[in-house]
Length: 87
Image (spheres, rainbow, N blue to C red):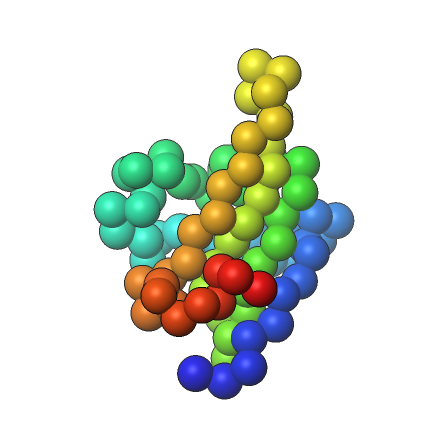
């Protein structure tokens, strides 16, 4: 694993939409458990991504639903348990 960077892409969501979609499609049980979709990410108020080797390997965000702010954070399987989410 190379050095992973964290980027706030809130104002650049359209630029990252293909990478976000690719990441979401690679999710397994996380997709169902978190009800994660590309559309959900694109509607979020704040989106941070973890990038490794020019690929999105994690997504964190804040969204508003029923006037309640909710957060989500998902790492790809190969990055779970590595301590990356602590950053």
